[in-house]
Length: 189
Image (cartoon, rainbow, N blue to C red; front, side, top):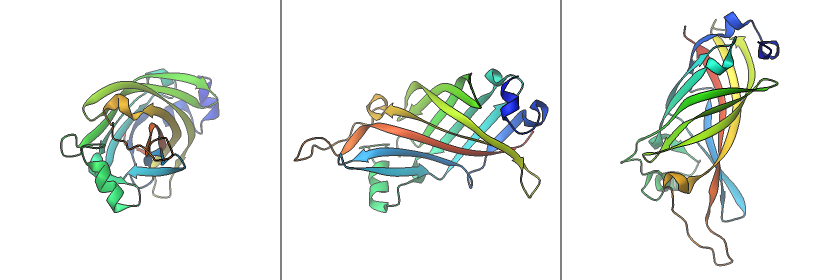
């Protein structure tokens, strides 16, 4: 595999099952607010698994389940609003899920991970470009692997429709939202 040369360790060492480490992983988002600034948020409760085949990355897979109630933008009032029916409707749809369906090798340690993203009970395909950021044994003896990447979605495609017009034109919240991933995963098998 040509990609192995850009990864630390051999294919055998990197291949395996990994669990996302929630204390060192950020699953976040960025949306424009009031047409002038960006608001960033993330989710603190999630569970995810990666099945890495370093010899043939196209055979790799991943999935994640995010607890919507764990949304955090640093402003409690905004977080409560995001949990309502205006946005995520956490009481009716307590989880956001992503399950990969395909991995494409893009070169230079980059991968196109396509899969099904479910928000508010609506499932749509997305592709996330991920970059392999490294692999190492941590001080506790755990084998770790890292990836980071992002993709842009239109939140209205998932039924997240709330908005308010601004007096000077435009709207309060952008339709486009950037999903950001900074992943650290620990090998379990």
